[in-house]
Image (cartoon, rainbow, N blue to C red; front, side, top):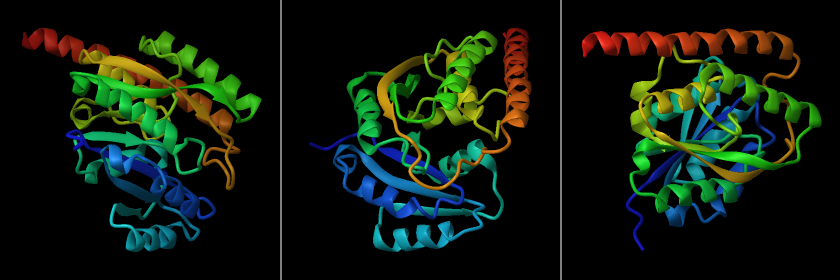
Length: 249
């Protein structure tokens, strides 16, 4: 059966040379392509290792891979956004390149999109109900979700849960200056809610990083402070947007 809705999957990669080939193999062997996945955009996010060469090699082997190479690291949110800019499908999704999100869970969230009418006005995402990462990361995730909901009122059960899938129209409605760090997740959900979109969270599994090092390892305290600053900025930007809309109306 022909799938009318198509998905572009963006994967930001920063020094992920140990994971690129396994990532491509995982996606290649999945059922995503028979269910509407049209392309996978691998974003070499200013890597200093051989990630770029591996992305190009994968693109030569597979016609469905699009390689994007950034000269400097634009962080998590920046890498995702640059990948979304070149995507061709109406629906955009993203996962990390560290194999913590499985192709099966991407398919589970995408199938929820396919089952829903008016899915172009719903933000779909994973909710990590089973986790195999470190306890310290889990605790941080819980507190971050609580904090994000208190500040932005998004009503999410797991703000940073992945994958995330949404209609590309959301990119034109991002509220405030686009966040380049992982607060980009919360900013997208907040922006979707502000324009009246629904939110659906699908249970998924979150695996431990197999190889490589997290991009924010060693700079957690600085990241926490920056996160608070950006969250309050996004909320203030939302309030300004509403005031401007009230004036226009």
